[in-house]
Structure formats: C-alpha cells, structure tokens
Picture 1 (cartoon, rainbow, N blue to C red):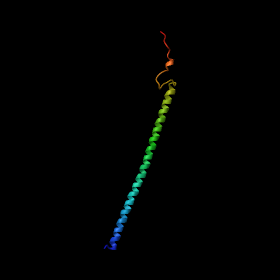
Picture 2 (picture 1 turned 120 degrees about the vertical axis):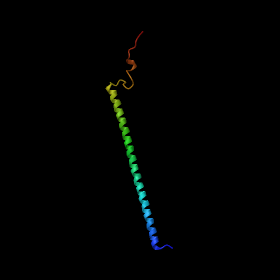
Picture 3 (picture 1 turned 30 degrees about the vertical axis):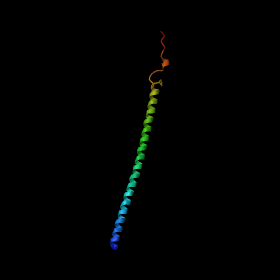
Picture 4 (picture 1 turned 120 degrees about the horizontal axis):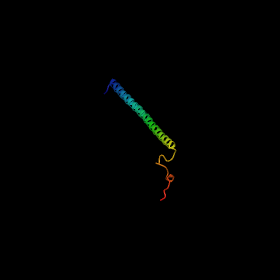
Length: 88
C-alpha cells in the first residue's frame, strides 16, 4: 500500500503536468490567434494593392485617351470613314 507522502508527491506531479499541458494549450491558442490576424492583414494588403493597381491602370488609360484627343488611341488609328475614297 502507498504511503500518504507518496500519494501527495504523485498528486503534485500530476498537477504540474496538467499545468504544463494547459500552458501549452494557451500558447497554441495565442499562436493561432496571431496567425489569423496575420492572414487578415495579408489579405487586406493584397486587396488594397490590387485595387490600387486597378485604379492606376484606369487613370493611365483615361489619361492616354484624353491626351491624344480621344480618337481611338487604344484601337489603333483613325476611323475608316475618315479616309478619302479614290475613284479609278
């Protein structure tokens, strides 16, 4: 039969082990929460960068179109009706 002193020592070891496990679980929860925040930050940065690039592209195309007079600068030349027709 186990002595009372041995039972107390066993109980102390079990409690220490449980505290250690609880500490590890708390650390894992903290790391998981940090990872979620980091992923949200990366997603927000990606969306913001994509939106900024799209706005720059639209402004650049608008600027090019208005700088050249808006006569089909992006299409590639004057309209076909503007060319004089030759008669044989």
